Length: 73
Image (cartoon, rainbow, N blue to C red; front, side, top):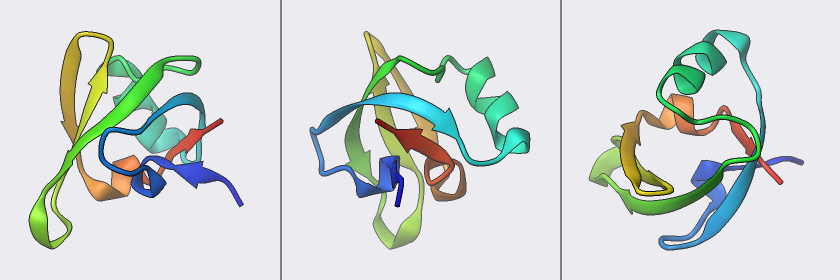
């Protein structure tokens, strides 16, 4: 089973390996989430909302549906 961003604990880091869905991958690539990028989970919104991710010095928020499409090493 592949780990996704939603499997990370707050503050935990991982490396992006791939994406589950090509349709979501296009959006994630556009905002800078690319394979071999170090990513960390900063915050989860309550009630299944968005998650805040840190990529280098950049912070981005993505929906849970997009976050679970990010496969980690």
